[in-house]
Image (cartoon, rainbow, N blue to C red; front, side, top):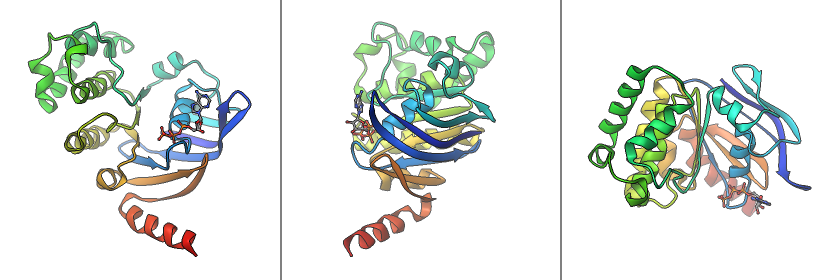
Amino acid sequence: MLKVNNLYAGYGIVPVLEDVSLSVSAGEILLIGGENGAGKSTLMRAIAGFNKPTKGEVLLDGKPLQGMAPEAIAQSGLRLVLDGHRVFPELSVYDNLRMGAAARRGDKAAFSKAVDQIYDVFPILKEKHKAYARDLSGGQQQMLALGQAFVAQPKVLLCDEPSMGLAQALLPPILSFLRNWAESGTAVVIVEQHLKVTAPYADRAMIIERGKVKFTCKASELDEKLGLAETAAAH
Ligand SMILES: Nc1ncnc2c1ncn2[C@@H]1O[C@H](COP(=O)(O)OP(=O)(O)OP(=O)(O)O)[C@@H](O)[C@H]1O
């Protein structure tokens, strides 16, 4: 589904990512972790077209995306949800969901069904469907941002730090929502600092260090691998 081959990207002449490769299949969740400043967000932005890679390939179902405008990449079925819940503050919850589906064109029945699914998972959004997004709490805005992406029904979802600005207790329900979503056939990439909480919901994990892939492993082996990596570094 999504394949990244030997990607290099940065800001102006400052290189950040170096030779990063990854792949995510339909129905799979890849968790990406790493220290602050390791390059995780830059990787998400480069895949989604907001930051032009200097070298390497991004393939969606075998079709190259690198060099395409972010709008065209979104139209191809790749969606980026940024940390810090970016929603339209002056629109109602429901209208935010409509904006999410705008890129999708047509099919009102599918939109209504997707909205119902979102309301089932996050009942507070149903309760507040007429409220302005600006009046939601941070956690509710994050749910709405995910809802916006969900109604667009992308093939690939990139989710940058869903826990950002959230009370810790809100992360598991959001992760479980992402897990179910992946199981319907979407390829999901989650960038997250809270590796311990997130790993049980993911299939594979990748750690980035100073712009390079440190290692990839099964998500169930991440704890052990991180322990081993720390031990190896200590010797
Ligand atoms: N707009 C920018 N212009 C210049 N350099 C940037 C910009 N954004 C990020 N960087 C630099 O790129 C490097 C990687 O940052 P990035 O935000 O991708 O890391 P990250 O792993 O997502 O970290 P965090 O977890 O703190 O978000 C850092 O050295 C950062 O200072």
